[in-house]
Amino acid sequence: MTVADLGNLVKEFDSTPKMPVLFIGHGNPMNAIEENVFTKGFRQMAGYLPQPKLILVISAHWETRGTLVTAMKEPRTIHDFGGFPPELYQQQYPAPGSPEFAALIKHLVDEVELDHQWGLDHGAWTVLKHLFPLANVPVVSLSLDRGKDAKSHFALGRELAQLRSKGVLILGSGNIVHNLRAVDWLKINAVDYGYDWAVAAQQRINSFILDRNYQALVDYDKLGADVLQSIPTPEHYLPLLYSLAATEADDDLSVFNDHLLAGSLSMTSLLYA
Image 1 (tube, rainbow, N blue to C red):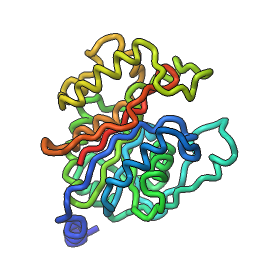
Image 2: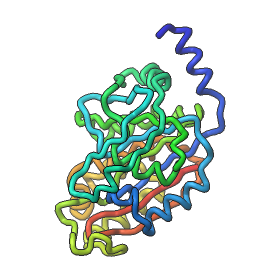
Image 3: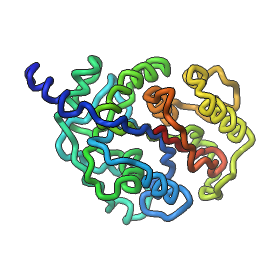
């Protein structure tokens, strides 16, 4: 791609109203086909979203060496789970991709490389089908580099923040409290049921979110035993840091789906607009 081509891309994706930033607690893949309090929350929030030129998704379910961005025209719908009803595997989310926009991200952020193999994992499509059910907005996914620490992920999110003014809606998808080993499977659908340590972690992290104390959230491993038990591995937490890093001081914050589930999961979701 020539310098002139990149210049044209910058112009194409420039000078638009600032797009929102979302963090979605995506939870169980069955949310793609079930009707519950969380899917109602997704659809209700969808009514407040403008139509973006493109959606950039950072999902907990795509971890790589290095940072990759999907660059295919037609990203596949990935059913990256097992043991669910056949109806769930039949679901498709046929949103287009954008090789051109992927090239623009690579131009703007030096460390990013292009990927032609991945697609839309369930952290992306099970949420997008409620937010943008027509699948008519191009979607590009950004991977989580396993080699980066939380500070570096946040710094990359700061670089990506400039995309909001280019018509790009940034969507982080994970779960803040996410300890699958501790899930009470007999109460997998029990809303507002959380172990004491999960309740304490949810309340503490929410307070930092509301205070916009992002440094404390980057340093989550210093927040005590309750938080560490709630975030035993970082992949579902890191998309939150990307979303927070892309915000600006004048963004209004809406918190929705702020419920614990099954003892050790939280569905807390955020909209900055």
